[in-house]
Length: 325
Ligand SMILES: NC(=O)c1ccc[n+]([C@@H]2O[C@H](COP(=O)([O-])OP(=O)(O)OC[C@H]3O[C@@H](n4cnc5c(N)ncnc54)[C@H](OP(=O)(O)O)[C@@H]3O)[C@@H](O)[C@H]2O)c1
Image (cartoon, rainbow, N blue to C red; front, side, top):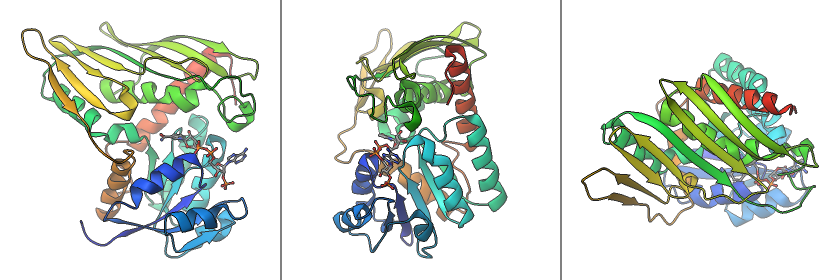
């Protein structure tokens, strides 16, 4: 334990909030004190399941709870902006689910408010904190694969024909890129430490008007590239390969961080396997709590400017497909 417990609230107690909460309550640094839903009865049931002291049927009432220090926002993408603003304006620190916002303009607005209010804000890009991904980054920093020249990363699954689901309904922020594609895109940003200088891409826009799957080639200059694929109506092998001048790293099912393998010519394969029992959302929560304890208003692992830059890259992709929200 690193000092007093940080008091959390959760806004939007849906699928991902349930997984997040089940990890959070295992942390000796955290206490879940309040839950808010606009749907009558839902917050109370969630609070009782995770032993939170209070529940609210209104976001307005929830953000006035003086006990809540930091809010995890698990609402749908189009609601992130309003939820984050409500929290920041009530003086609450925020950990907001991915995608941070619908576009770069919204992201810029939230970052400005957080900085003006001197309040902590972070995108919940949980994959960055997983031990297998941290191990891969350590290998890269130690020069184990030499100069990184190429990345391939996929995340795709097939939700089937479900036009009213949040994954396909345009009004709910549907589409592969905002839900799934953001993982390989953010991963490319982590690996290369910058955004591409040139992007080539192609998307399948389905009947509901959203991208059902897409492929993108990111170019970084000097021959460095990332080939990224994603889908919500196409199952993919969700692996990442990071290729360097002296070897490569394989991350099977990369966004869940199950394992990392270091391949170098003439050496045995070095393996890192993560046998965690929790989902893995605990690591992003611990990072947010560490920042709060240190008085920081943003994380150096997922900096706000990088979140904004990633949203700009995603805007560029959608522009290539003629897709606007
Ligand atoms: N990090 C991850 O691994 C991961 C995994 C899945 C999803 N996510 C992200 O988490 C967010 C929530 O996804 P989810 O699958 O958890 O969503 P969900 O369970 O369908 O809904 C979450 C909350 O969004 C609100 N909501 C749901 N349907 C709505 C609708 N039709 N209109 C308006 N509000 C609605 C509800 O808030 P109220 O309770 O207040 O009504 C609900 O509790 C998304 O942005 C997604 O990208 C992240």
